[in-house]
Image 1 (cartoon, rainbow, N blue to C red):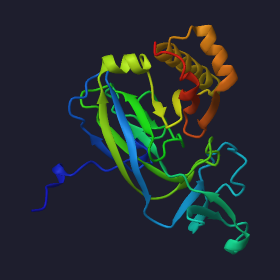
Image 2 (image 1 turned 30 degrees about the horizontal axis):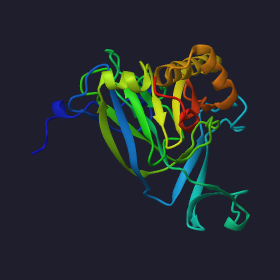
Image 3 (image 1 turned 90 degrees about the vertical axis):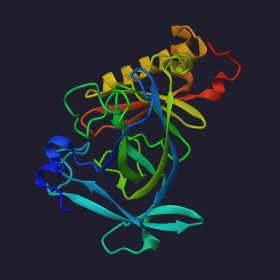
Length: 284
């Protein structure tokens, strides 16, 4: 039976919806406003032996300067296995052989992971925010986790925007965009447990085997750094009970603040706090 036209989904408008292909929304049973949803990246398998890096619409960091032609410049990247590791192969010139190419390791991750917002207006897929979305944090590889505050019942999780590799900043507009087969696990952290673990999170928090990674986002990169610093201070205070001035000193001496990306309208910053540094500190 062919569905009537009225039952078909509305046509997609990239100007309104954004350019990303995403999977979702996924209703998470039992997720309530104030809880955290934990997204665990269990498997991220490359599906094809190639990817593309694109500098288009003059939207990279050097807008108005690159691309020189004013037209889209896309670079095709082959993927090869070298010494047991998947490697991206960037040509040094048109038609160059792999023997004269630049080679870099792949670190597959999903650039978009988010929850529905408590707002009547559906967000565009490009700018990230407290809901997650297009956060483009390259630490989110296999075996890592992303925590997001639930804003609506059921969370309504969505994921997409697969990458094979990305440098912090993503300066040319896109990373090495390529197709992944992703396996993720969704868990709910009840609000009271979440408060005891991390304090009152207002935005995305990443966890790797080594780091807790609070985030800060704003259209102004300076303000994004400040927001990330405050999020890091709040996290350390809630989890380990350090006073503000001691936590501030620790961040200055031992924590790297990295630029996640600066090309998605809203800039992102993330801080890498080593959990092992607090091994001798009782949980606050």
